[in-house]
Structures are given as C-alpha cells and as structure tokens.
Image (cartoon, rainbow, N blue to C red):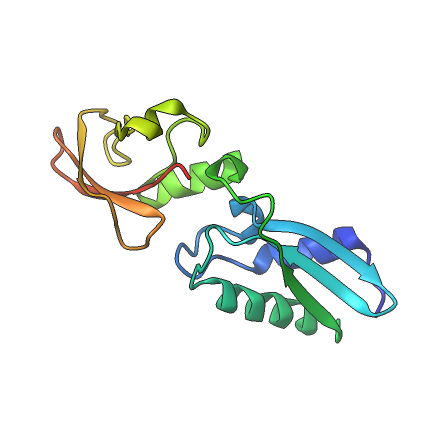
Length: 162
C-alpha cells in the first residue's frame, strides 16, 4: 500500500499514551517524523524521558495502527536528541490534560527557578485556584507530581515541566 506521509500521520492520531489515554502521541509531541520509502514506513518518536515504560506499548500501537490500514512494513525508531521537553506538548494536549483532571505544565521547561528547587505555581484543575501545595514530587507516573488544592481540598496530578 502506498499512502502519503500526511495520511500516515492521520492514522497515527489513533495512537494514545497508555499512561494518559486522552493524549495522542501528536499531542505529546513525541511523534517526530514519518517517512515513507521503498523499505516501508519509518516512524520516529522521542520518549518523554529515558527509560519511559510506555514506549514499548506506544511502539506496538504504532505498528498495529498502521497495519490495520494495510501498511505491512513498519519500523519505529527512537531518537533521544534533542531531548523531549514539556514545551513540545500541543495546546490541544494541554487542554485535554486539564479536562482530564491533570494540571498541565506551568510555564516553560527552560526556567531558572527549577535550579533552586522552587515549586511551580500550579492551578487546580478542578476549581482553578492557585492556592495549591505539592504533596509529593512523584505522582501516578514519574512525569507527574501530586498536588492538593487548599481551596477545594481536592488532590490532583500535575504534569511536571521537564
């Protein structure tokens, strides 16, 4: 089957992050490149961090999604450079996180306050209050931290700036 790179990218919008299923690999910004050549389709992805346990599942889902469309020869490559940052999250992805109850990253990944251990100002995804406090540096996954809203008292995950 011969499909355009644009069509292949469209098919890949079905592939979601197994840890945060409302986000596609495009929303996350980990889908780096799609090439269609004589040896088949090559999809290039970048993990959110080295050793991310979701990458194997994402690889398998990419292959499955393309094979369902009749693409038989699929190769998935991982590239580590440049390293992924939360700056690569799409605006749509940030909105999906918020609607899902996860506070999206606050600010840019390239900020000096991170060097001094200063916590981000994180708005509660439930009520919008910025009166929140970090309860744990690690949440349900390594890329998230646990926070608590001081106004509505709800706990929530925060997708850390990386």
